[in-house]
Length: 166
Image (cartoon, rainbow, N blue to C red; front, side, top):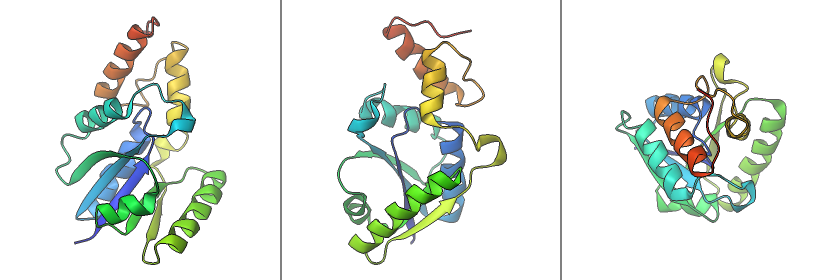
């Protein structure tokens, strides 16, 4: 059984993330979506909320497991008996960063393989950071996130005292 891990902040989970997860789920026996604590990215959702969001958005994917993590990715891989890391790359700058990370992971775990996946054409320029900014400024994010994710964002914005655009 080959299990892959797709790590990320997922704040919020975008259609681009979903694209990689769903396609990965057709390639591997199972995919573990590792939602990182990511202290440096200043997420609007807690890890627990991001786990709940992903579980709701991906409820129809029986071979996808969603869990939180902090610490080294290679330790998370070992914990889940996985050796494949899925990474989405949208640009050369993404590739440069991910290539370095893949090399470091391989230095720490010799049998770690990283599979780079290019999002489908409609998701090439979608990033969680940009979606979050658009939402915080009252823009329409419906084409970038699934309806359950949009509902979570609307509730979060309301709790922050910011009304989402209708």
